[in-house]
Image 1: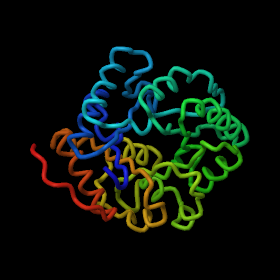
Image 2 (image 1 turned 45 degrees about the horizontal axis):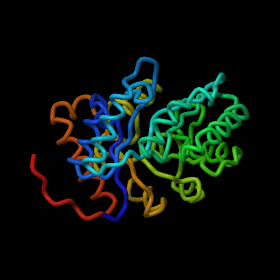
Image 3 (image 1 turned 30 degrees about the horizontal axis):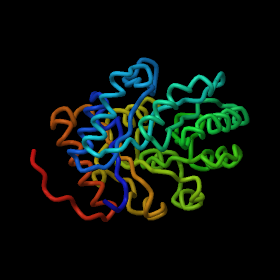
Image 4 (image 1 turned 135 degrees about the vertical axis):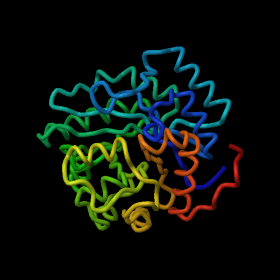
Length: 277
């Protein structure tokens, strides 16, 4: 199968364990998914396959049976006391899964130290065939695309990248010109969703929207067509559309299928043929 790679992010169906998320991706018409092996915040839901040989084997078996790949792994957060050597088991699991990218968040306000730690992380991940993609988020130390690009460029690692999330693009002061200026070598994938514009005015509101209540592509006010026109046409796209209210009510499969259909429409891709429920 050819064409742009679409992947279902773990956050779209966070309660689903990894084998079930692989199944969801297949049933929703995606060739890949992303897995959350580490929590986004203390106590957050995650599926640490690096510490469960049984669950890792179950996930690999489901991937093989359904011909679904794992594209990206979440989430490594870089704080002041960061130690990239602590992530060996995480990288090893990623290699077993055939993953290509690791989502990285920057929490250290000391940019020089954050840059040095990011460079070391990239060096540690490279032998496992993984890129490290720094996601800018308005409430973190990497608040916009310009900051992310500066850190990645200064780190000087071939597998370092900038991750553009449509929601954070719209709420971080990042412009379309900022996105267009990102070098192709620093782009490994992007994330799509929609949201209200303008967004929440508080940090708490921004975080809640991002983690719990995104809109399907085309439902909100983000300039998605314009954004993705500034990104490479062959760039893999992770569909990240969590909704704590709508997804459980619809059922995660129906929600994922709606997200995939909306994504394909926004990106100008041919719609999938109808699938059985």
